[in-house]
Image 1: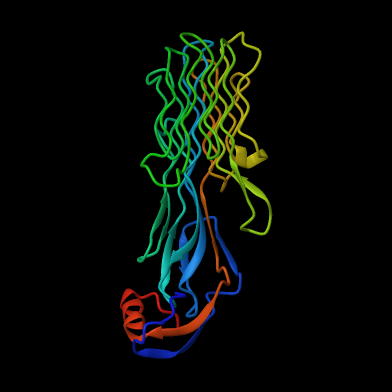
Image 2 (image 1 turned 60 degrees about the horizontal axis):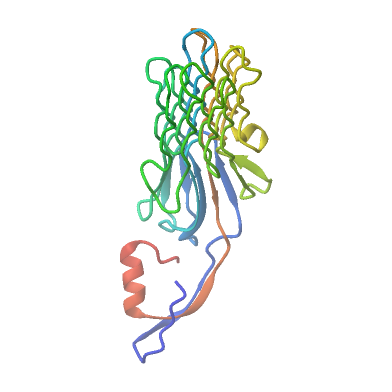
Amino acid sequence: MNRQSGNGGILGINNAVSDGDGTVTSFTSSGTYPAPSTVSRVQALVVGGGGNGGDNSGPGIGNGGGGAGGYRDISGVKVIAGGDVTVTIGAGAGRFGPAGEASVFASTVQPITSAGGGGGGRHDNHLGVAGGSGGGGSGDTYGAGAAGNTPPVSPPQGNPGGDSGGDNTGGGGGGGSSAAGSDGSGNNGGNGGNGTPNTISGSNVTYAGGGGGGRAAPGPAGGNHGSGGPGGGAPAGSPSTPNSASANTGGGGGGVGDANTESGSGGSGIVIVKETGTGCSGIYRMQDVYNYETQGIWPT
């Protein structure tokens, strides 16, 4: 929008553009973002719902931690000035849920989607599930952690889960937005991958950390969640109490380490929109004005 005509073309009027005043709008449930008539670009943080930890293992087996929901923080997202944008908040996965749900900022000009996190491996599917970040593998049978950044975007929206420690061992930690989940080690569960701190809301909050992998009895400890407190996912059960990630963080649920016990659920996602206030003014070619107007991104 800051392209100025310097080639002798037909000039338009001097157009002052605001692009907002720094207003922040947070969505913890699905809704609609009404773009002001002066705003054509925003910063959008979009975090998918977290995956659940693995559960229902054989006696004393560690299950995988849930992967975090996809994490995408993008500046300069195009919206139609004065138009509405549908916002979808992905739910975190509950028991037996293979993955969390995607969160979407559905701009018709530039939609942003963050995938749900993958679930942790469990007794009947010892492999982690791929997602925004991947779930950790189960130690019921050797289980590999699953891929993150699925489907792929650039920059990546997440990281893979950790592997289990082998047969009849601790589970791998779920992947986080800033780091992969750690592998289980012997009877110990792996730690969840770290989440990512963000200040778009005005406070420093960490989102999208992986859940800890469950311990294998008599292992001393299940895996811890990724860094960042509630947004870092959930720690593993100790050994049989489920630990769920906090709502609207996109964290992965903790795996458990006992027979027929319920895993921790993933945290629901969140979308935060900031009207960045980075305006511009200048003189533009009429052809540029026409092109922007037909794309719906010329502020008035």
